[in-house]
Length: 317
Image 1 (cartoon, one colour):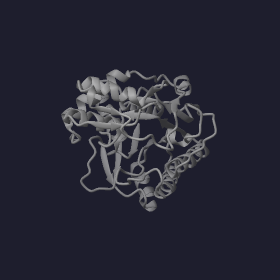
Image 2 (cartoon, rainbow, N blue to C red):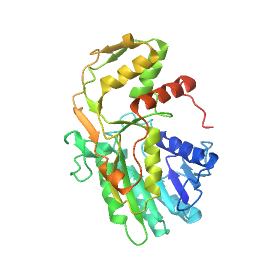
Image 3 (cartoon, helix red, strand yellow):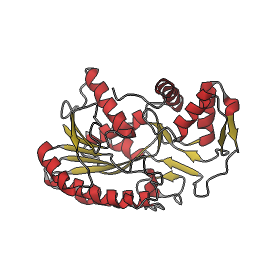
Image 4 (tube, rainbow, N blue to C red):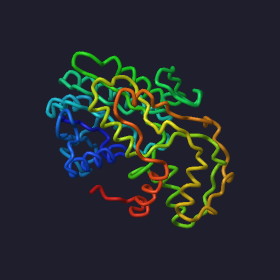
């Protein structure tokens, strides 16, 4: 497998490389069909080196450079994780989402025309929108209500249209995730660090139900989809069960031994927040041998240990 990985320095990209490296260093074949994985990554920033494989410096918005990259690398597999970075504070509503969708189409078409065999694109549960019923199933109509969701949903259609002539493709739709390398201001790391600092945290009542899964399970699903060419179309990736946001905070408060720092009701509820967002994972477990393996308790314990060790500044090595 000659893998081209975009978004290698992001949350999913770093964890995917961690998984590939662990498989390699542990002496386990990291792909039963293709043998070892030769990794090629892209980055826009000089000096932003990947931990795995060959680094290619280019801007994916430069359509010409995409074709040059595909021609020089000749990837058999593409895992497309790149999208708006953390510098976009209003990433769900930014018009740049549609620019990323356009650039992604150019990348996918170049990959297909260059003889690519397997494409896995990172979609999102946001494609279903907030108006959908609690459990999201891949067969239900998409109803995105943000620019981010609209762009991702449109790109999912492009992926479906590209299948054929030697190319198979899948859209991975992760739900709510946490773990190493996450942005520090997101729910789990922000709670871990505030609790460690002894700061009182104002929260909503936390009654909304969400499907949370450790990022290590999510990247395992991405690798499984890369290795399973018969699995085409969209695949939800989640725990398959919902928990309240309040229970996440309570778990972390218990781990830290400071539950009194959690001030539930100290913040108002969001106006556009759906009461329940949970993944139906029947499709991915039917098409592949993947299933969630890390419990919520195990995942939050691991995340706490990682964040307390790194304090948000873990090195790439």
